[in-house]
Length: 459
Ligand SMILES: *Cc1c(COP(=O)(O)O)cnc(C)c1O
Image 1 (spheres, rainbow, N blue to C red):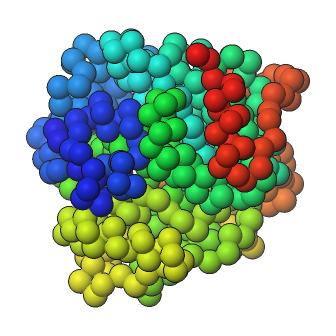
Image 2: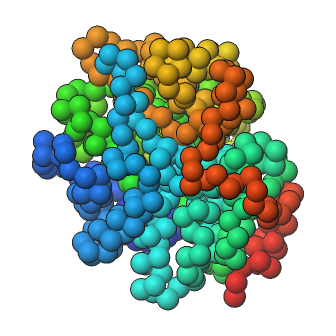
């Protein structure tokens, strides 16, 4: 399997190389040259999650990992998810299902990808003897998942930037309490888009990048997208592979893009629905054709408080028929002018792939209350955004699956505001509030970050 950059100017890589590099050297994102068709889609129902994962991921990894290595990595990764189905499908109302992706060690869907790529990184680095430095930017959940997955792994130093004061206390503590020497939580003065911009600066500084062996595990890393394709297969298999709609609470467009790959592989996904909070650049782009960065508003669903949605570049690349120079030009306009207009043809292509909706704060709180009244279940605010948008689009006779992206206990303030209850942490996380925190404050400044990383990483 060969991987090409969305901007057409970076070397073509294999799976392992694309995974270890994260961002392409031309600033683009890696995508497989062609999406493999999946055979045997009717045979998946009733198989263990790990087996489906192996069959779905195998075509993407090519010669990078042996079957035994891939199976071992999958077993170890998903052994840490505290539900035997791993991604259980739970009926919310007739025809409307919740795909629960929050039973992993950090209580958000990010564990599905991060646990797996930590295992794959370990195999690859052991083989090559290479030492790398992972730097990540997070709006909360990616960072905690990365620190949890990579803590104590040999040959890796991990630095996670999060926006100071803009993540929930549970998210912060999940990043600041692990005591492994190879993980470092950095509280950056700024918001998530600042963290993400500094991360891109580090990658685009090729001397620094090569000097520290910089690797990225943000949702732009293709290996993460691959891991997220799997649960679209398991959910569709449980529903008998009927045409099904999926609604996905969306920020950086990774989770929903995995849905379009699943569809390209043959999963009968009828409509993919992008659900956003009031930070609605994706909803505006998909409905109006203009991708224009606005101001970031802090919301009760902070993992979606994003204006620059990185993985959208992959959807654009497909919508522009694989024209890397067109994408490079759009991204240039974005950088210099804060936005761009999507061509008529690409807009149509996107509208064939995606529907969208946005909900405000009051509606999100109201949806947490409504679902609690109707089912007794308590949703996290991100999942509530998804359910609210899904309800606007449910059609009789077509199953709707909404991705439940985090556990409500990760966002207790929002949940308490909605229903007056602070959901308890699951037993495996009960000690979180008693552990000492380790965190470094850093300015939103590339030079400050570079010297911090050089000083702290192991040599
Ligand atoms: C990361 C995250 C999202 C958004 O996912 P993307 O892949 O960035 O679109 C939604 N909900 C939660 C809880 C998250 O952690």
